[in-house]
Image 1 (tube, rainbow, N blue to C red):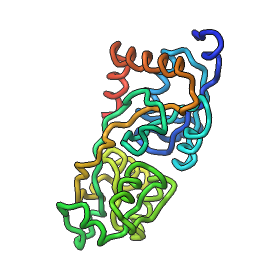
Image 2: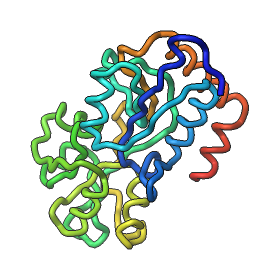
Image 3: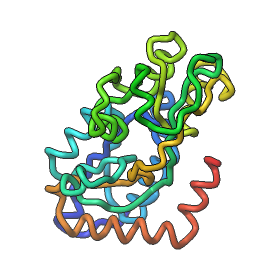
Length: 233
């Protein structure tokens, strides 16, 4: 493994959340599209690293406070811009509001503000939760991960679940149901955090950031990135 002297000898701490299919725990290993992209980038750059899944609030706290920490898959929007060093996009994502398909009382709606009539499941401190809080939503049930949101939706403890189609499908299957169990009632078109990124803590040396950005660009140019994305379609 290639390592430059000094700064590159540092072991990077890589953190993420349980957010399938981009990052999730399978037995003892962290898997997912985002995980494969980040690991390919780190291998290309020649860094040693540790990789762990935490509740999102814990992961983002580590990335805000410690040196040499990478975090993924994280949405990029103005409120977060100065909190991290942004390495690059690792996945594209579109967000929707889901309800149980059997809920005839919940019809598709054109304005997000109409969701205030229902209880909404969110992940604590994630981008969509911050987006909703910024728009004065108060009917939020905050959870540690999307698995909890799926289970609460099934039990009737929440009415709506804002999330990507890919993530909704994954957790529906994990709960023993098909994607047809859910229906989209609103497309969140004005949310600016549509790409998922890998970012670094502010105390990470600029030389490390540069090397990682170059490595990410390389795997996007040589076909490695496209090969990973195709496996998750």
